[in-house]
Image (tube, rainbow, N blue to C red; front, side):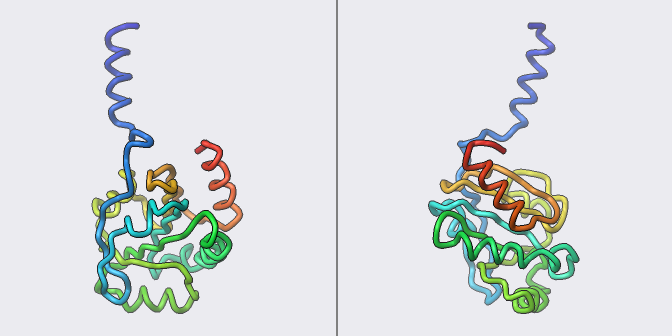
Length: 167
């Protein structure tokens, strides 16, 4: 194999995340009441976890959040859970709380400042906007990012694929 090809492959491999080596992210955020929580209290607790990044004024988030409440209801006592993270920032906490109340969101929610570098600590992936969904294995290893709308059926299919070792 030519040296330049070997170097290119090495550079590419160093830029890719190493599956199975990373544990749950270490990031402290506040819940909507102001109490601090590390996201690893929710991720890597023996269940698959879907983290939904949302904003109170995101039209897709407002239209689709009920799909994640259905998913959470169907899975939380078995094999998976949902964690919501509002990227509205603490200054808009009241709007985030109104979103949760309006949609009867039944899964825990934390609030983050709308800083892409902070948000990217959840997955080491580029943050493109809301909604974004991160999938984690029961041991807390990040395995998949989904940007855009995600209904319950799609989440079920992705989870089934991931359980089989797919992506």
